[in-house]
Image (cartoon, rainbow, N blue to C red; front, side):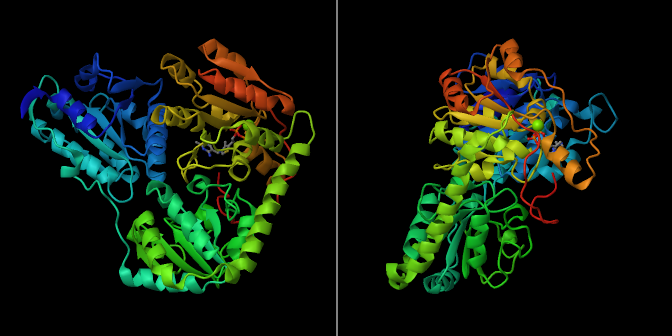
Length: 563
Ligand SMILES: Cc1ncc(C[n+]2csc(CCOP(=O)(O)OP(=O)(O)O)c2C)c(N)n1
Ligand SMILES: [Mg+2]
């Protein structure tokens, strides 16, 4: 036990959780915490130029590192500005702890300056939103917040702390390791009987598919997923935007399904007699929530850490509540006696191989595309050449960045990041910067359109001040392309609100003190991106691309057709 300033106790509690970055912007209500970081190197206040950016960076940090992180913002608008990024953390299951400094208690509920009902604003996008009422309760409420953020399905939480509880107050602080107030070993095993039934079903399957969801990434189950697939001859398919759950170079890997996914993966899923959805909620983006991708005759085994997701979107043959890795290991054990031999799985393995090769050939053909400005598809064969194996890639909303879902290859978990069913345009740059802070040992790029890039362009200043080596690749078609294409196809080309007039992004980067690159020829993309990565500094690579191109027919009501 030690008597210390209340703000210092907050920092020590965060530090015990391994938090080494706190994202935000200062305000009078939070100086009582932020000044405690004076002179500290082990835990830093990463000051952004907008609170939305702070929340987006925290999201990228938490997803890339697998660790919890924190935002610190002032009362009213300072905290409200976090909302979009916290909503992303909610959808993307990222443990971000929001500390909101509030007005003093005797000013609350009197319509005072910067006073809002923040709890009710944040409740729908957090797992826990709470007021602290007493100085002595700050530390245990903060520990409860970490418990909510880190247990089971992970996600953001929010604490509202009236400033008078912290200003020049002291606390009798006792340090505790996180394991003493929340479960830190979370290997929830599946029910033994359900595992047995699942193993029997898989053991007899003729055309099994393993659909690896976000739970495979969170529980680090990629190796077990691959072992299962190899044992049974299953097609390896990630759920939407979780391509990094599986090594894409594996011979059983087909491709990603869903709205921006590969038709070959749809072929494999539709043919499946048994689908093992491992750590997947069978989301709208992955499955369209109809039987256009999943065959009504397919028998589904669904594994999820959250019981409320099991059987929620599709009827299941076997539902298993459990940690993806633990359940995959149980299945491997249970399968041992009944595993099918190589010869029995050969015909399906051959089909998987053919589908895989078809997709790779389709993608390779795009290297032949011509046009000036180049078609956005033409960028991707070049990116595949140059992005390092461990490179973290953040994909923003927009039609051109979205081409990356099918076209980029991923090998390692926690290398692919996106808007995670939140759908917010403009997250690319800041989430990308956050990933680099969370995993400084890996290269980081973001992929965005001109529309998305301008949402958060001021954070180039943060990247320069904090020396964050990150490459923002901007596919510039001078329009909100995704919407322009919609207006062209479905609204008689009545263009409203879609055409953009941009500055040169490489020049903008230079004005901020970052490195700027501008590439117009496909053959120069690889070298330029390589140079930008080698610069070891914040960099922007602008690539002008065409507005229009032939599109795949889309079915009304297909997955993700809202944007
Ligand atoms: C916050 C938010 N506002 C608006 C949208 C709708 N929206 C989706 S994509 C898009 C255009 C994106 O333009 P750009 O970033 O240039 O990418 P492009 O489609 O041109 O490749 C818009 C406006 C959205 N998804 N999120
Ligand atoms: Mg655009």
